[in-house]
Each structure stands twice: as structure tokens, then as C-alpha cells.
Image (cartoon, rainbow, N blue to C red; front, side, top):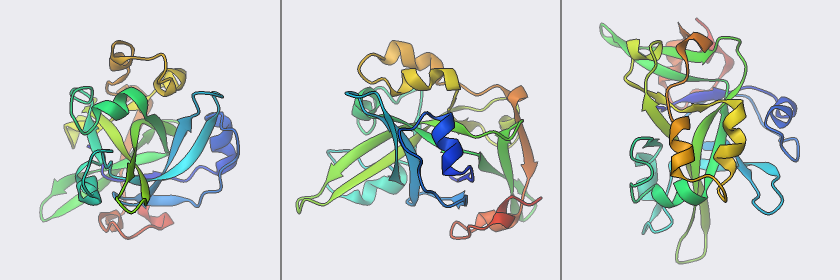
Length: 221
């Protein structure tokens, strides 16, 4: 699964890496948690321009009666995303990239859970495969929310968890965002564990365990 991640890369660098139409203004985040606002990149189908928006982490399907389902929808299993009622419409029509610099997983050690930070080996930013949804209540208030796809773990992550977020290769960003052209047959091959040899993992500060704590020392060893 993916229940916590970080994004420290400045907006200027994100705009260049992900070919955004404008430079976003973002504060560094060291411990992004479910139900919080996360940065997501979407593509305008008419102009083919990419824009970054802040979406609530925890997808609320357009047909939901209320928002309470959201916290249970922070992840979508890649194996069933095309058929699950909560995700299948978004998988067809509302895909996004969720930029990150790393994500956390936990390993139980005696009486505590030790957090580990998983990043690219070269410490570069990357993107999770995400879905987003538009929901409106009877009074007209709108909520835009998102979820992160997961797959089985690679050899690196499997030592502490059997699932990991789907990380897309930069060459596949365009295909993932192209909801007019790309169907399930083209997308499913993208939804696989990222190669272990391109990633690294290390133990970090247990302060990460507190979902409300968000400071630079989260990533200290």
C-alpha cells in the first residue's frame, strides 16, 4: 500500500520535469498523510497542457452519497482497478500523476514500528500512478479527490511490505494522462513494481509515525 509520502522538490523543478504549463507554488512536505491535500498533475484533453492541482487524498466516487468513503479509498489495487465500481470510471477518464520524492513503509521491530523511506537511488523526484474524481453534494459544494494505485512489491520493498505504489517511468507519463487514446490494454503493462535496482531504502525518524508531524527531521536516519 501507500499511506505516507513526501514531496520536497521546488515548484520550478517540478514544472520542468513534468512539463507543466505554469510553475506551481508549493511548500516542502515531509509527511503527507491520507485526507490531506496532495499535488496532482492532470492533462487538459483539449489543449494537451498539464496543470498541477491540490486534491484531497482519499477518492470519493462521483456516485457516493457523502464524503465518508474517502479515507478508505487512499489506494486502488492495480489488479482490479478497471472493474471496481469505486475506481473504474476514473481509471477510464480521470487519471493523474502524483509527484513524490519518496514514500514510507513500516517494519515491526519488537514493541515499535520502524519507518523506512524508499526513494530513487539518485534521489530524483518521480510520479505515482493516480486517479482523481469530481464529487458534488446536494448543496453544490465540490470536492476533488484522488487515490494512488498499488501493485505487488519489488524485491527491495518486499522485505517490509507485500505492496507498493505504482511508480511510472517518465516515458509513460504521456500515455497515462492520455484518457482519449489509452485504454486498459495499453495501461495494464504500466502497473507493475518499479525495478529494485533503481531504488534505495533506509530507516528514518520514528516521528514519521505521527501523521500530524511534518518537519525536515522526518527523513533523518
